Image (cartoon, rainbow, N blue to C red; front, side, top):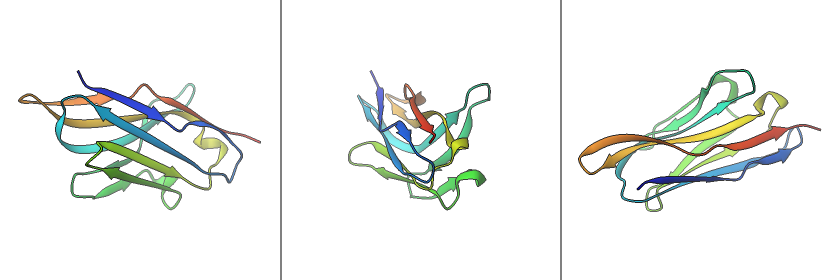
Length: 119
């Protein structure tokens, strides 16, 4: 059974920083795509950042230059460093991992972690 455990959310003032992490446990291999999504209250879930197995990254325009995604392949962990946070970054953040379980490629989601940016 594969589980994704997120940590690092919380309350931060505008201009502050937070780092999220998401660790995958269980029999998942050949993880190619790892990403972060977020869903603000009353809005649809949106892509924040994604990183491929060869290190290529893609970011939402709204977070470019402020957020950095990274991965530790040995630990099956993906990170999201968030700097210069704004109130509009407030949302529940979800990690997503795409990898092989048995012979199938599967997609898994974390449980979500709340990030609140407020003074």
